[in-house]
Image 1 (cartoon, rainbow, N blue to C red):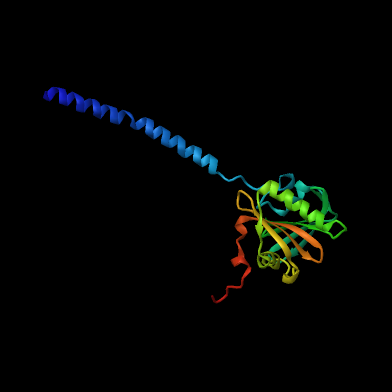
Image 2: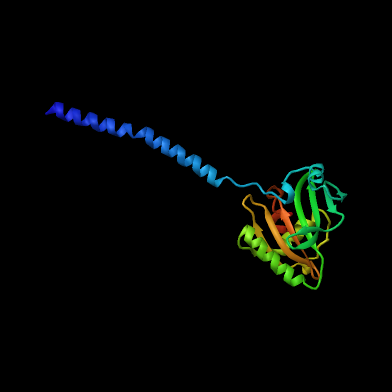
Length: 202
């Protein structure tokens, strides 16, 4: 009787421990799979331009006439003539902080179809980045204030929309002067600037 009980216990012991390697293997496989699935795809702009590229790298990739405008720790690279964006033409602006790409804008000039163009680009951006949310004009102004103080007037920014890319890049579409509108891309590591508020002393 004791011998039979010992054999039963031994078999149970073997069955329990024989399952451990399988469990560990499955656990490792799940962890690796989750890591691959959750890995964020880096943001890639037109022609393969990506965040943190230097001014010279961006110039070499674009290979179009552009002019450079230095501004303290910031440098701005502006296309000398409009570039093609979706169905439209816009001025292309690359913005660098300490020679690393941090922001990009497209500025669309006013024309007879401005409102329709804005609506079309809203739909186009939704098709790439998903549904938008309302953007805070204070945040948009704060980004540009870093380079050109008061280039944007807060009361002129309206119909502002925001998307977030997979890597955390913020994309804004908004009117900023009369019927002139822009798309602004902001690198995730640029920081949120306290959401555009002055928090000194708070």
